[in-house]
Length: 335
Image (cartoon, rainbow, N blue to C red; front, side, top):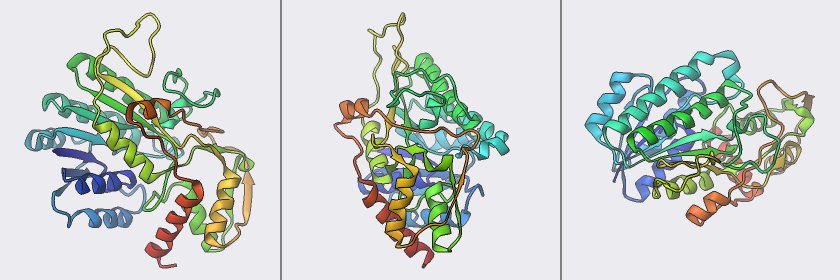
């Protein structure tokens, strides 16, 4: 079928496009190729996709209302996998307008396109950041998520609310996927593990926040892609038995749901750094610092809903995933 993938030059987007193409689908990719991080890396990802039969690309900004409407009208995708967004927690403290443009205005344009073209399933990237100040672990989709600690997280929570409105008003099946700290080959340079690798290889000191006591549910890219594609094949249905007196945030009477994709194995930052040091064959010089504004001390995904729905749960060991990333990094950067 024809699938529209937004953010196709992004980390997750490129990998999702490759899998869809391998399955024989026609893929329409869009991306604005902004300079939040290396445009050269985005172009290199795109260069892997452009020669493949079945892939077409259009450079387009989500906030371009007329451009997005024209794209949906001309392409008429059967499904949409919406992965484009302004990412990053700390950058949202410096440039909040970028998040409003891409994550709010842009998402409305995606929803409107899906509504008018009667898309059979919209799968979109939410984030583990929506759990914000929650402390009960593991994070479950049925938890209340009304206390974000960054604007980035607030925009992702807003996406879930906006999607529900469209699911209710227009019977648009939507699934929001809360990704937990995705890593792997072709990853984002703004992520800590990427910066650590670069600094260690260059003999520079790395900044370790919260004295290395942070915990993250590191999830390998192949597991994320597997989860996305399995969920895409299963649009949510309306649930007439939904209890409005005791509403479950994970579902609805409308064809709507949210779901975690995480490794269900939180790892302390110091252990992660140790695994990275082992893969690189070098020790890091560490500068210990307090936790940054907008950050959270731990993330830990409850993945039971994903397992029940698809029979799949991420399980790539950290050592394997990090080894794959380091091998890619050395080859890509020739170091």
